[in-house]
Amino acid sequence: MMAVRERFEYDLQELQKKLIEIGNFAVEALHRSVEALETQNIELALEIIDDDNQADILYEEINDLAILLIAKQQPVAIDLRRIIVAIKIATDIERIADFGVNIAKSTIRIGSEPLIKPIEHIKEMYEISTEMLRLSLEAFTEEDIAKAKKVADMDDQVDDLYGETIKELLQINLQKPEYLPQITQLSFVCRYLERAADHVTNISEHIFYLVKGRQYDLNN
Image 1 (cartoon, rainbow, N blue to C red):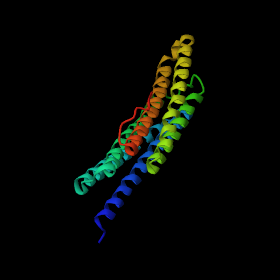
Image 2: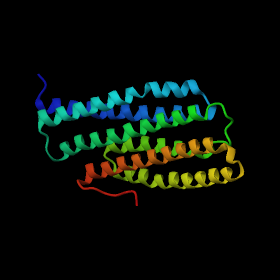
Image 3: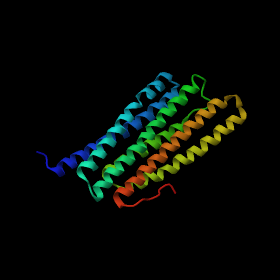
């Protein structure tokens, strides 16, 4: 029969695996949603919306396992922090997956109207955000605060791109006001990606809490 501590370690690893799984799902959701926007693929956008319940199921599984671990094992200190941090990270990742759905909805609203400009900056924001998420999951697994700090620093790049892209969209709106509905949707997409990067920064803060045992604000 598995010893109590062994069982606990096994369940903690399961929790970690599920976190990586929901993290990978969020990365894929953002990837597919930006692809759907660029190619104006409405069918793909609809698929993304349909698939979102997978993230919700994983989120519930993580929460259930975490609550079970706390109730059955009554963990102390670092183990308890690991479980609490897993719940917090899962919440942030679930929100990031939701932003993928929101981008898909904006794609559907734009429809087949030709895009007013290439979405290079949006793609760049997406690439940095997803790289941040991948790195943050590594930082969590390795309990590496140097990596977590690097992730938080990358958020500035997304903020800069966000500001630049919104400025460009406002400029286009002055010249082509008839494109306001599309400009509005593209502005929303930029906002969703900027918020996704903010949620990854939250994950970095949770990792600092896990390792250091106190809260840090990495958004400043």
